[in-house]
Length: 162
Image (cartoon, rainbow, N blue to C red):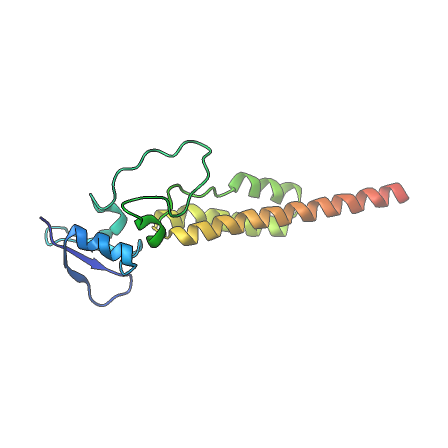
């Protein structure tokens, strides 16, 4: 059995030695979060806790087009408490680019910036922040489309009145 050491980002000391079961309990209680890292005495460097073999049971693949579900069952409820979603959120990049070109440049650029951060945050294990960035990208796409629609209606009214 390996003895694991767990550390939170920016922490001065690590927790441990801990067993895999203690790490699971820590995740359920919220003392160990998805942004934590782990190592053993035989490892050359710290690794993300999400990559720890045996920490979470294997999941069934998420079907294409299925909505992202927060808090679905992964290892006895760890997912909901640790904030680890099942599927990566959509970054809406195609929509962001389209509304930037056709609707509102300023809002579209904000949408693209938010959209481009989704994959990076997800890869870093910052799942909640990735979800927030995806939601913000979607919101800015909608705002940009609404502004474009209002401007088109105003231009149509001006053309009809002239």
